[in-house]
Image (tube, rainbow, N blue to C red; front, side):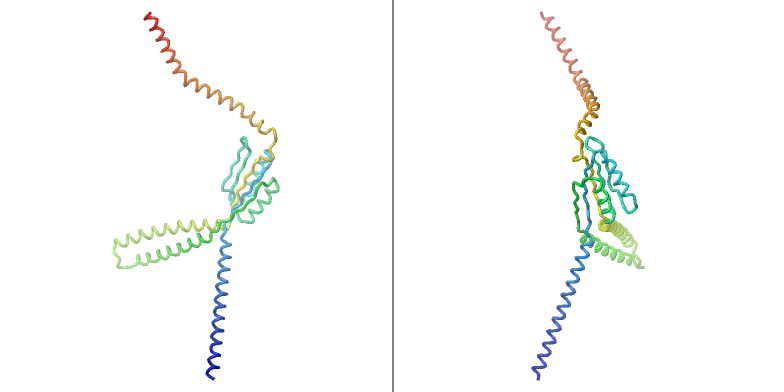
Length: 254
């Protein structure tokens, strides 16, 4: 009888252990899935879009890109338009993912897409570290504020505590700003737009640019020549004086 009771007890014990292990494994698995899901939501994406259009379309597409980012939810971080020998325009835009995809779709339909690449950066660890540091700094500030309110504290200690509180508050504000910037990078995406005219460039385009720059190049050459003459003229004068003087000396000796 005792053996049966002992056997039943062992069975219940093993069943309980296996259920506990199963629950623990399930909980651990759920935590891992949750962490992976959270990590996937902490990716900062950056797009690179290279477009090639005829020269006369570079400025037009550049203005179109700017007009597509004319809302409060879209920010133009950088912009440049070069009308020199090589027509080229660049823009850097930050907006939400839906807005970025819409801009890419519109611009891709207006030019030849040479390249479109995406780069992602996982910011889960930096954001998590910022949160932990902020929590520690706020707890430290609370401890200092509690010491500050003590009635039996002397003046020197109070001054040091106030200085420490000010320093901690400064660190909290700086770290909060960094954390906010990291979170902004996760909530939004960056689009780098490059508009060039290489494949769609006309045959006469380089000749045309050379002719346009001929006047400037010619005047620059004359300017350089005058500078060289002005630089060498004093040496020529000195050399002429020495030569004339030497001839006179030779003539006097004769």
